[in-house]
Image 1 (cartoon, helix red, strand yellow):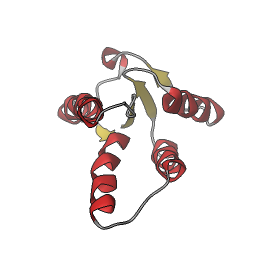
Image 2 (cartoon, rainbow, N blue to C red; image 1 turned 120 degrees about the vertical axis):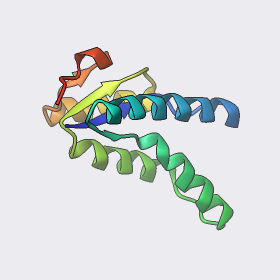
Image 3 (tube, rainbow, N blue to C red; image 1 turned 135 degrees about the vertical axis):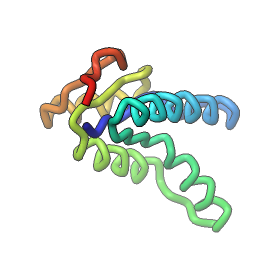
Image 4 (cartoon, rainbow, N blue to C red; image 1 turned 90 degrees about the horizontal axis):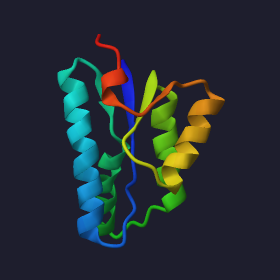
Length: 110
């Protein structure tokens, strides 16, 4: 099962953003160990850092669209915490009838 990990990314400091990324990656690792395919949009953090090193600016809306395209292929969305971006993802999931879960324990075992 493809599981989209939805959680806040944006934060006032780089340390807080990294903490958000780490939390999402930890959930992704747990999902992978359960036999699922974790889709962790927070990993775009590292693409964005590389883009910055290369002098390329990628707009916030591009990253949101990137995440929604990833969500579109998923069987379920797991919300680990909420943010304005997650609210957009919830609206998208509802529109496309992607089940929304709030607890990893509710993800069926493969």
